[in-house]
Length: 185
Image (cartoon, rainbow, N blue to C red):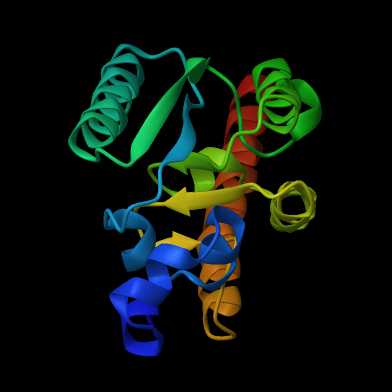
């Protein structure tokens, strides 16, 4: 249920930004309703293969194009975080991810924009743990594929999001096993 079904335009205008974020749906966040949001972009591909490098560039171009089209999104200086050749299975091996988390918390960022949930993490436990850390610091993930806004999620969104991340986690574990067994032969 979007804000426009609960409030008049005048009432929406009088919501402070954090109040807006707490009640907004994905569609509300994607619509200019008079609030400006500080945004960073996270893009990640897990390998250094040529096709993955092109996919990373395409992903980055899509995210930046979206920010340019959304007048209520303000890309923070140095707010593009690109992880090239990093698995999303463990945040421990992702220094750029850790840098981004520290950056968004210390620079009053409102939104981390990602193409899909598995670009943020392919580990269900870590995903929800970091999602909670971000919420506690008044930051939400805006995930394009699946249309998730993690700062305010409906009960039905949690299993959908968990399913998205767990598919990525299973895929990563399968790939890791395949690569390990190939290396042994």
